[in-house]
Image 1 (tube, rainbow, N blue to C red):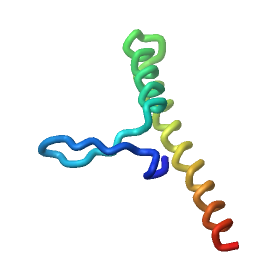
Image 2 (cartoon, rainbow, N blue to C red; image 1 turned 90 degrees about the vertical axis):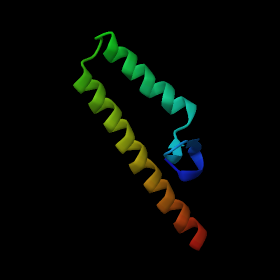
Image 3 (spheres, helix red, strand yellow; image 1 turned 135 degrees about the horizontal axis):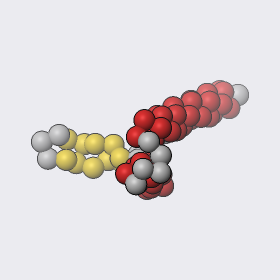
Length: 73
């Protein structure tokens, strides 16, 4: 996720905390609900969420590299 996509919330005693966009929160909450109702097991839910986070980071890294190359051209 890009830094400008993140929202920041001030938490007393902790400071600023980065919060993902609402559609990402809804996805994570949906996976959590599926796991809570035992539609999927908790380890499977964890793997799905971690895989999703890693895919987002890799996707944005490629876009960032493409944008940097386009700027220098």
